[in-house]
Amino acid sequence: MPVERLERRALRLVQSEAAPLYLFALAADEVDLVADVARISRDQAGKLIGYQRPEKRSHVRQILEYLDSGDVLFPNGLILALPDTVRFKSSRGPTTTDGLATAGTLTIPLSASSDGPRPAWIVDGQQRSRALAQTKNTRLPIPVAGFVADTLELQRDQFLRVNTVSPLPVNLVTELLPEIVAAPSSRLSARRLPSALVDMLNRDPESPFHNLIKRASADPVERKHLVVTDNSLVEALKESIESPSGVLFPYRNIAAGTTDTEGIRRVLLIYWTAVRETFPDAWGLPPAKSRLMGGVGIRAMGRLMDRVMAHVDLSSQDALVQAKNELSRIAPLCHWTQGTWPELRLSWNELQNMPRHISALSNLLVRSYLSARTGSR
Image (cartoon, rainbow, N blue to C red; front, side, top):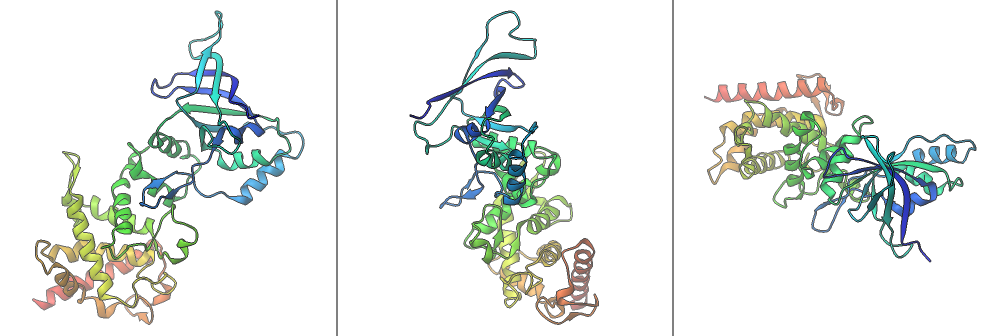
């Protein structure tokens, strides 16, 4: 008969009244009873669920080999997000607390069935938890730090913060940022709006990037058909939003803390649709076959956007036609899928997603565009 609850001696630390922190121990075979992993993915409506990256089997195997090796010292604990149904009862006596921590008993409710949902989520230590679930050393005591978090937003927030020492994959951080209340740092905060815009571009049926962007939550099978790395597009949008000369910069009211997202959406859909229609043979292909869809192409065309869209009347019904006319000024010199860029002295497939090539291609496109506009007057 399954155990209905688990009781453990614990220390209670109050760092935040909103989220009590408990330090306690679990046996290796109890971790799987108490906690589960919230894998990052999206539901049928496209809403982001979870926050954990995919399991690294080689890492799990290495940990498991160590756990089964004999004398084990395993100080690397787990961080769990506990449900608000946990209960803590402090011990009696004058030595219960030292002013920093209070000793007592923590009670964690468990599922009524062995295959039921786990009450807690693993915020840090998912690879360790998988190894612990398989080890022969089933009663090995494992240190655990658990905080009460009944919302997914708080769990995601803590997940990003505790993983700043061991960097998370950039695309995982990028996709999670719009889903949390406050970014862990000013650097990450600056990526929240661009990341949300990239999500919009990927999900909006009117977007030329619809279902083309690789995101951490993408299904492994679907990833084979995705061609644009989200980080490249995030960086391109971030530059335009932050630079005073960027076409997206005026859409943010920094003093009021507001953003005209519909205005930004219109700019992006018009420009990138014009790019797609200007280079139809290069659009939608994997970067190995089209450098337009690779990081070097996305970043360079993102910088050209700031120049091109400054000459497009967005209120006009023929704004798309205007954008295509502007892009036609540089179309003949572009070699996304074959040939050579004479000015760069590089074959099309020698262009790489590196700062030197991004800068060189950006400068070429912008310089050529401005020269063509000046010459046409």
